[in-house]
Structure formats: C-alpha cells, structure tokens
Length: 115
Image 1 (tube, rainbow, N blue to C red):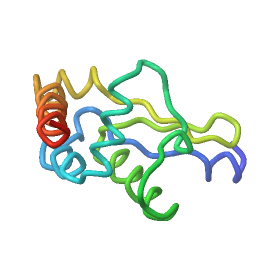
Image 2 (image 1 turned 135 degrees about the horizontal axis):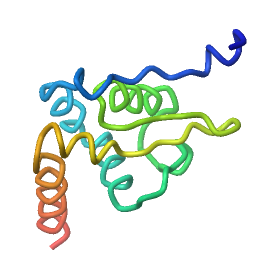
Image 3 (image 1 turned 60 degrees about the vertical axis):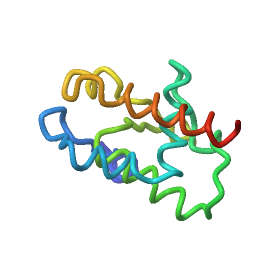
C-alpha cells in the first residue's frame, strides 16, 4: 500500500467494538440524525456531497467522522468521492430495534412539526 493509499483508508470499529453510548451520542445530533434518515431511505451508498446540510464543510466532515467512529456508517472512497452506507444489519444485530425505533420516532416528530 502506498502512502497516498494509506492516507485514504478510513478506520471503522469492528462490530464487537461498537458501543451503545457511542451510537446514541451519534444519533442525538439533529444534523447526524438527518444524515442517517437519508441513508436509511435507500439501499445505495451516498456521497458526502449528496447531503445538503445547514453547516460548514468542516462541520459536515466532523459529523460524518462521528457517525463512522461510532459504527453507525461505513465510509469508503470511490475516486474522489467519499461514499457512506448505513451499517443497518450490524446495528440491528447488536441493538435489536434501536435504529428502527429511533428512525420511527424521528419520523413521528417530523410529522408533528409539519402538521
């Protein structure tokens, strides 16, 4: 592996390293929760540039790093794009019902706010 390739390798926790408190922390931020909701709505991986977030680029980078380091998303480079995928199966195995419950609660809250 070249030095350039090594710099583009993103570190992710193994499933056994994912902690409930880290996942809950990652999901507790409205910006990160909106990212997770978008990812949950598709089976496809989405580039960071797909998301229109109300924060600066550096803050966006921070939010994706928190999601990756907590084990909520898996990121990889495809060319110059950083692609993001929800680690749904791993999270469901570790914390049954957690992600679906949070997503349902977020949808219900949005419906209340919109209604």
